[in-house]
Image (cartoon, rainbow over all chains, first blue to last red):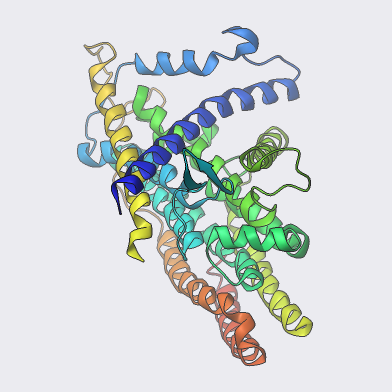
Length: 331
Length: 118
């Protein structure tokens, strides 16, 4: 790498981090406002115009909370766990293409941090590594609720990981590449993959919600039974790191869904330029997340496991077989 | 080739720095001094009796083993899927055999009740 490349990578990395943190902050507000509306109340609207400064107020409040380290915790792991969560969440975004190549300051800048031939695998790997944060937090906290939350997270993650991974095989067959840029270009030339892989899209979306531990699959932090699960013993900014990781993972998963199934940064008409199209699609999927949370009750644990192993896994396998036969017949 | 991973490394380093910064701030900022019982493990107001590091149900272990098996199968799918168009009918038949074997294993685990949580 030349010096210019390194500067470019540093600038892009900083942009990704700042953008994701902003997205995290405003996603919390967006979610609370929509939840409020769906429950016939206004949601937070006092801090700043229309509540727009609420995330700042929350951040400041969290920063000035006392950092309590309970007795009996495994201190190195206890501190490492939130760091792992947030680092993997931020890094996963590296390979997602945000737009075409633009010319800025006389330099051709591709709008993605990295594009390598196993891009998709990288996102999935980072998502799986994120589970370490949750499991280690559960183990290190020396709290029964946390331990249960951590164990549940591990079991849930590995159950839905299979369906998630398998649901993407159909796309790989059609696009013939693991590089996300190539997948986006494949959709720009032909149909969006949601139209040829509708079953895979549904399986991906369900598994992705389960992977990010969101309602109705939020058994990891089920307030009513586990008082918060793996982050019970975390206070202030340490808790904020877990919160951050969860929301950034939601953004990444939505960006991946938009990239793989909804045509990435391409839009049907030239109304908006690339990155804005992607943002619109991400917001669409994030809205779905919130509406699902407001609509569906939490699953019971055995129902969660049955959905993953009895339904999603065989359906994803079926999707692979059908796609393979379909492609062979068409050729 | 390996150079394309450089930017990712930079992003990982920068986000690690962010995490370290936030963790560092968390111990500097905020009030000091602890009330009685502040460092106790939180169990909804009940005084904790035993350590939380206990045995957990073997079901989790069984699930982990099944996951290992199936996840490796999924990884085998990826290279096949990428070059599927070039393999043609040969690739399809080979993979149907593979999926068939995988499905027999799935049925076996299913019948044994390994996939039931009750």
